[in-house]
View 1 (cartoon, helix red, strand yellow):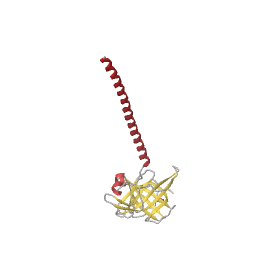
View 2 (spheres, helix red, strand yellow):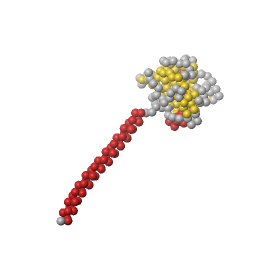
View 3 (cartoon, helix red, strand yellow):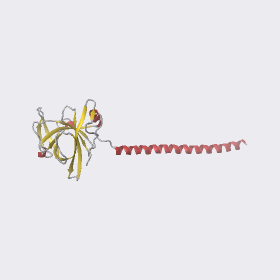
Length: 229
């Protein structure tokens, strides 16, 4: 079974600069890409402790990005299965704000793994329809809205906010994306090779210098003796 990769685990406490969060659940998804002929994976971790109870952290396996899902509540449910890429329409929040959005992506994810206790009762192999909307009137890092549909009846909408490493450390006290051990090992080997070459070069210079010094001493002694005579 495919495993999760994010540096998170159930019941983990995440202490940021101004936050104290707890990891309570996780869903691992996959989606078949007909064009690339391969599966793409991502995982969504439910966390508590933020102002909104229904908050999640997403880790995308393909581009290694970490995003925060902040719930956004519209006056009407949006069915992602009825949307098409490129479609444009207006949505209204419950507080009265209107947003003109464009459908950026639609798809269906399959639940591959479930951890902890999640808001909705779901099961492995269950499908989740989703759509990504782009709100061009919002600040650059808050333009994406994710719509999800579970159990063919549960609709959720979230602001999808990509978090930099710095922002992850401020919010969670650590980075969420996994450590790239391959890169670390390659860098360590490269540094070791440089150090070995440096030490070997110094030892070689020391040995050569000692040999020349001894030679000069011998010849110098003989020459000095000859001149004295």
